[in-house]
Image (cartoon, rainbow, N blue to C red):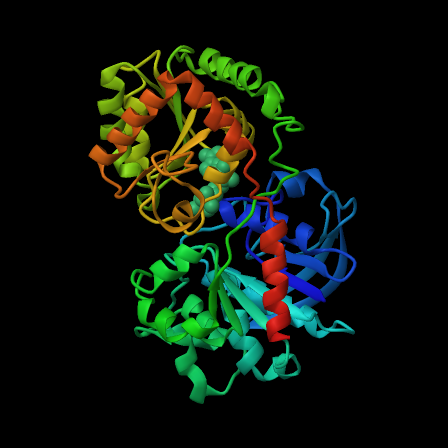
Length: 468
Ligand code: ADP
């Protein structure tokens, strides 16, 4: 089977969040003697594209309503990835130093149209087109409805919802940007009076997946307005838990971390990484280190961090280290805590891939009090690095973390995203840290949990076969 993934992000080329990690890993695990998975993504102006050389393999022009844009398809000269990757270069729209901005309608519509225009020129069409999130959500509609893509009608396509909060809404005034289609079917594009690319994809894709089984169930009740649609389409919807890239996230080979380690050298390995963090961020090596890594947005519960952190830090028995960026008010509040809590608290406001790896390796506990968590990769990285996750039981967190109070439990879970519950969870973790025998046993236990992509990649292949 020839599988094409179409996505706005792909690690290590361009990453904003978990979508990049998934699209950068899944194709590796899907490619074998029987299947070949390839990726098509936009060409951005970023560190990766500056550091590599590209060759143009196709040149053309696309139309969006009245406007024409020239575009190229580029390939990497030295393909450093384990799969083929193609870049859609539309200099006027996509070649920016960011992935997302406030008004992306034309940018991602042009990306989708250019992708399909180029696929039309292929001698043999792909067996599966796999779209990711709303940025590629108009593809299932165009495959089914646009006159110029009529020859694609029989290509099975899949939509994976990584996050249903963002849907790519735009006004019906811009419907003219979409390549001509049977206007009697314009309703397929609409949800609640707007053009909604995610809703259109849920309606038109042959199969819809979410990145964890629990998230699929939760979306039927809370999906930023799409609840009824997801319930109505539930027959073609499944949840497939993400995996993690076992090669990138490997404590024995990770070149970002300060000391590599295995299960039997966990104590010295984690200590060396914690020491580095304590030295760099002025923290106390003798106290447990709680970390947060991620976007500072409401979905992650970050508005509660300032108060929660103060409560826990006032007790004096924990360090907290945060790596993230997002809401500027929250960023400011978190920066303000640095001075009064110097010695046990610090925050790095920004994005830093290297630091994230060192934190997964050096922290004792990872905080994830998310309000919404479609899958969550951080808890799986933290397990792999022997860092005990403290999670709110929702979405993928519910599917991957069992509370220590339960048989074979290894994490700390709380029911709600509330200050008092997060503080209680931290208190439970401090107690666990003091019980060194139990703490060390759990750290070794979690490093052995296998969340590699192997099982999930197979589940996707099975799904493709069922619609092929
Ligand atoms: P989401 O996609 O909702 O942001 P996920 O848990 O699925 O959350 O994935 C987040 C990914 O982004 C992880 O690989 C995490 O390590 C990474 N990440 C998030 N924020 C930062 C940051 N500030 N610096 C480095 N890595 C980050």
